[in-house]
Image (cartoon, rainbow, N blue to C red):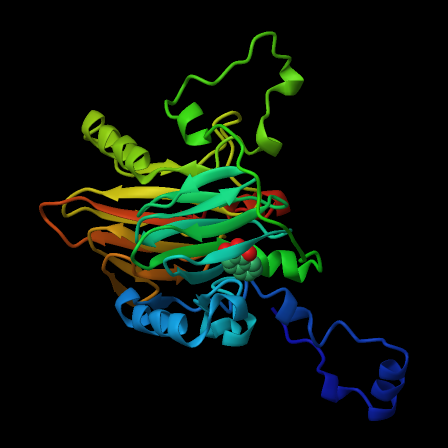
Amino acid sequence: MHELGRLEDLPQDYRDELTALNLVPLWPSLRAVLPPGVPTRKTAPTFWSYQSLRPLLMRAGELTPMEKAERRVLVLANPGHGLENMKASPAMYLGMQLLLPGEWAPSHRHTPNAVRMIVEGEGAYTTVDGERCPMSRGDLILTPTGLWHEHEHAGTEPVVWLDVLDLPVIYYAETSYAIEGKRQAVKPGHGDQAYARGGVLPTPLFQRDSERSSRNGYPMLRYPWADAKAALLAMATDRPELEAVQVTYVNPETGVDAQNNLGFYALMLRPGQTLRLPARSPSCVFHQIEGGADVAIDGNTFTLAEADTCCAPGYTAVTLTNRSASAPAFVFMADEAPFHRKLGVYENRG
Ligand code: 1HN
């Protein structure tokens, strides 16, 4: 590719005239916005140790009362994007949130889509669109765009969870805002009960096809870890030859990704297994639920223990290795695949 003219090649009076009229020449920037073959990525492979961040999160619990925080969160920010931009990747925000016994994080709703992956503690619950969702380690709880949500803690020990939001892209689109609300009335019914068994769906009598979708199109809000883990273990036993023992968190009525922009998955690494994930366009986040895995990204190897988190840029192959020769390892993953598919730019380069 030959070199194009630079800004400095243009006479200053011409540049000044362009600026005065809010005009910019394309050619000095063309290669920057359209680099050859592979996009420029700011997303740096980054690792966040839970053991290191946990004391700082607990200290936030002492330093900042709930009334002064609304959501008490330490953001897992990727230095490649600038810490102040609060991005793990172009489309993913990550944060570790702390709720202390007796606290209430008030009800609100907003345009960004959120999920929570519960990291530690028992006895808290989040109420989403009136459904009261208990929070236990490894559970995935959805807070889709526009649905009211609030968090409460009736237990005795701190509760911590990992928030994953599509905030960077909703903010970039100038579509990010919130509305404050009142304490929600709890409605009967739990999606994780109604949809607890794959292949059979709740069916009201005389239902019309147009009435099939329940709860604003989000029939299932809580995905218990016990069920996802049981599915992985059953798959691994049933299919010893299967290379990737993986499940996707989906809407059980449609089979499509559980949320609009981000994809969520749980992966089981068999004892001693090494698994290469192909280079695909989306960035990816890895969070260790159980066991320990090494995550190799572009010459960096991160050693994940339970509750550790890391991220990888897009167009980059990632190799996961279970460090145990005797026990399986379980990893939660989040990526930007649904967003890339909507943009029409999703690629798997193998
Ligand atoms: C939010 O609403 C929550 O509801 C957590 O727990 C993190 C980060 C940015 C914007 C909204 C929550 C958030 C958030």
